[in-house]
Amino acid sequence: MFGTKILTLFVAFCFTGYGITCLFSEKMVKEFQRFGLTDLQRKLTGVLQILGSLGLVIGYFYYPLLALFAAIGLSLQMLLGFAMRIKIKDGFYDSSSSFVFMVLNGYLAYAYYLLLL
Image (cartoon, helix red, strand yellow):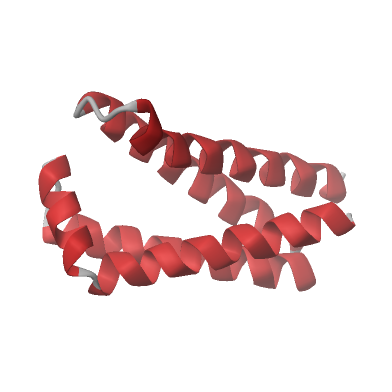
């Protein structure tokens, strides 16, 4: 379970940073415009990523079911992000982070599912 703790905290840290960036960075405003998404979708993405990261941390320490749902939600969000990158024909390098975080969150979801059995 120690590896799960480190991975949970790492993923939560990354998603908190990305969520804050989505909300306040001019670069992300331009990136979401490039994706063909609205300002509301950018803000919603940021808020959901911050909430997901909080769900991972709170879930790890207190409520594993919350961590399970947070990991599933973040994994689905990364699946959609990866699909968007493919749709707009981004290269492997630009698309890889969403795929990697989809897999990492999928692993966390599986780990928390096993913990709850």
